[in-house]
Amino acid sequence: MLKEERQSLILREVNIHNKVLLSDLSLKLDVSEDTVRRDLQELSEAGKIIKVRGGALSKSYQMYSYRENDIYAYQEKTVIAGKVVSLLRDGMLVLISGGSTNLEIARILPPDLRVTFLTISLSTAMQLLDHPNSDVIFIGGQLSKTARISVGGEVVHALQQVRPDLCIMGTNGLDAVAGITDSDWEVVTVKKAMIRASQKVLVHAIAEKLNSVQKIKVCGLDELDILVTELSPENDVLVPYRQAGLELI
Amino acid sequence: MLKEERQSLILREVNIHNKVLLSDLSLKLDVSEDTVRRDLQELSEAGKIIKVRGGALSKSYQMYSYRENDIYAYQEKTVIAGKVVSLLRDGMLVLISGGSTNLEIARILPPDLRVTFLTISLSTAMQLLDHPNSDVIFIGGQLSKTARISVGGEVVHALQQVRPDLCIMGTNGLDAVAGITDSDWEVVTVKKAMIRASQKVLVHAIAEKLNSVQKIKVCGLDELDILVTELSPENDVLVPYRQAGLELI
DNA sequence: TGATTTTTTGCAGTATTTTGCGAGAAAAGC
DNA sequence: GCTTTTCTCGCAAAATACTGCAAAAAATCA
Image 1 (cartoon, each protein chain N blue to C red):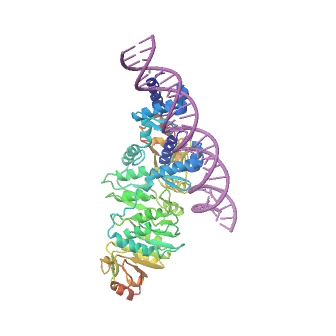
Image 2 (image 1 turned 90 degrees about the vertical axis):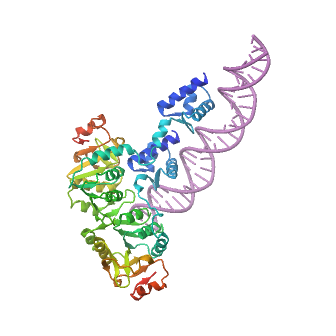
Image 3 (image 1 turned 45 degrees about the vertical axis):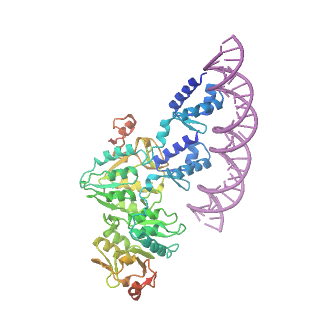
């Protein structure tokens, strides 16, 4: 087999599977691992693949995994934030949780919007304070080191005293069957209280998070009203959620 | 499975769920916990995740961090912070206000100190959360856009429910005759409540702020216990304060 | 065609990296 | 206090990479 022939086969293999193992190629091409190694070396020097120990990766794979210079999936989150902001109206009382998408929402609020925000997240509160016309009320309590939000009985109690028009909540796990799930018990407790307090509940999640389940249940889909993702509402992935009665945006 | 592949999956997992457990990853990736631990270590050294005991966190939580270059009179404030920190003991309940000196205090706390902090300042709370062994309780309420602290009746009411061992307070105006003064009515209200709640009150100020008077009175020197400046306690400037019965540090 | 040169390939030995494991230390929970 | 979990360290086995080399293959040229 010609060297060029072999290398083009390797290249194709890499681009199909995003990765190849040295041992697989050696077997499939019926040449020694050394030869494959040298081929990968050359392809790598030519900039066509990324050589790593034990095999090689496609360039697109590499792009995908290293795009997290700023916020992970920033594009998607911006889209979501835009959709959510379009739902806000003057005079609303809005309960908003933490997470990078909510941070983005707070960042892109129209300057003339007059909303009163309730939040339990330090960073969301910080960002909201930069808004010229909105009031921000922080629901205090014991602060969780990991989530950087207020947790504990104080928060739950405070949430029983209010009746926000809308709750904007990010989620770590959203599944058509399991509903909203999370992995931190304290966070779950607070989220439950937030949902119970609010007249309408909006959850947002990047499509990647759909159909993922964590260990502790927050609530079922029946307790939610609106689902926002970066996808078009007509997307097939969202069918189960529409069937569950959620308004898709 | 290639190492790069594994790390990329881990990174993805962290970014989707904001946190991952070592044990979960070990199970999901079918490698030993040691291997996962080493992967997390590497990703953490590369600055892509935050390694914590038992797992890792997404970086997006840690967005607002401390910047020391833009603090005015950084040297003086560091000295003051050092003096204040030396007064803290395990088990104390400490009420701490906002401002850059308090931020510096929070930053240089000895890692093994076990103190419960009460605070009304978003940035102080953020910084305190980075401390491994201290609890942080945020006293919520309406947030002041300018001071970035909780203000209003809720805060005053909450402060009536606690009895901290020590109150650490920055001040804009400190004068031997006028006592503590400030310019924002809402802030003054909260400061009064903080002082009233606490068993001991420590105020700190850089020498520049001594003998300056603002428009609204917070309290007289008789309600204070400790004064910390960057100066030596024997400094002549401080004589009037010693005569007023303050402990100088 | 046949001799010569160049390139490619496989192999053996050695170096390096990765991985899992066990023991003890440190931290967290109780 | 104790127990459990997690971390750290060293180590050894396995996998992978590198080196030099010689044989095989291909290319070149008279």
